[in-house]
Length: 589
Image 1 (tube, one colour):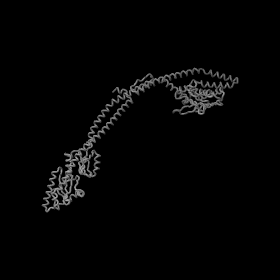
Image 2 (cartoon, rainbow, N blue to C red):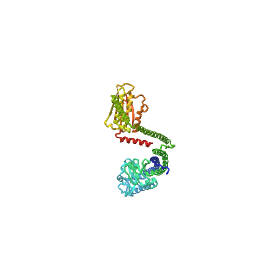
Image 3 (cartoon, rainbow, N blue to C red):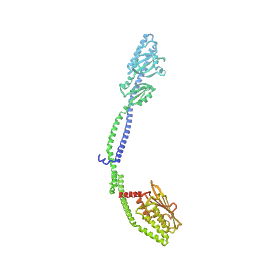
Image 4 (cartoon, rainbow, N blue to C red):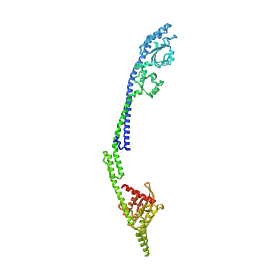
């Protein structure tokens, strides 16, 4: 592990974090998808299993309901019951005797039928005799008071929802009522068969459902009306069964409805969602453990892969640091990765070329030093030249050779400005004076008129520029621009202005003429004279490679020379620029 993190870098850390993060995200998404898919399948399978069990329970319920209804039909068609209720009692003794016979007949069936708690009889047969035998016989008015008598007008029998039973009301019953019709079509009474809620669901499950939190039921009639239920705590019965189902579904219970419903009852079961998702919890724990294990396993893999990918980059960075120290002999070894092999190959080529360029710059630097020394040698005792020219000037005046005197005077000024000091730069006003002297001499030499025009703002006359940069281009314009044709007047214009170029304030010098223009295929580096190339080399040597000279055809014929120089107002700035360039060359060497 120490070997893997021997050279930790930002890229190394980033790659490790990205690899682990991406791998963790991929595993997490895969785990979530697998868990969700498995949970849905398991949930559906468990729900289907529960539904199959509910169908079996519903079938039991249907059979039991059919048995209760058959019992009711048997009672209402019983001959003894029909005869007893068809004839009014002759006396109280007759009433008591027949009442006891009816009670015993009803009790016999109630005892035989599983889950049947009691059978009641509602009839007007009493005719004012007081009812006895407990809850067995009631007048028809009692049925009306209980609120279900009116439903008998539209049907012979129906189920009554769970209700309180007995005087204390501590028992809940589900009842089935069926009317007794005599041979002549008259209504003799109504039988009511009572089944305890608890007993009903015990019959369905063969165990105490009220103690089993996993088995909750809701029983509805064919019209969707509530009949009975076994519900968990916190869930209350309301008249709107659909609303109750929605309310229950929003809690931790899920509602399942059986497909095997009888023509009278529908059965729904409430199952805890925790039960349905129990297997999903186990799978979730397994998936979480597996994901954590895979993530931990991916850490050393991420470290190894990241180290494998970043080690060549680290080698390149170390090579660059070596080059920064001035050692250009460093070379990168080959890599087994194609992209890194491409980088190292080009890095080695770059270092080799950089070494060659540095050697070239050093040679140019040495050449500049030698040129400065030669210039100093050429300037030794320039006063001898000045005095000689002055002597010629005065001797010409002695012989009244005024034109020769003026030519010698202009030549003397030309040399004084060019050799006035040992510096390679002059103010703009001196450079322009040097150019005017040269143009004055050329007017004497040529057989055509020359108009020399300068356009410069006064605030630019004190800027510092390299010495003798105008004269070679003026000479080129006079000699080559007007030698192939005769001109009434040759016009040469020098325009100097300050302009922003590439985000910096620069000095722009434009030299234009109305001469014959540039020859075809002209290249300033190859076709230009020695003086012009010398100017270009000195500008780039003293001012920097981003400055120089451009030559192009003029807008109205002729030739236009554009020279861009740094805008320097003081000699100290020029000296600072020279030192910075010299220091740059020395550091590269």
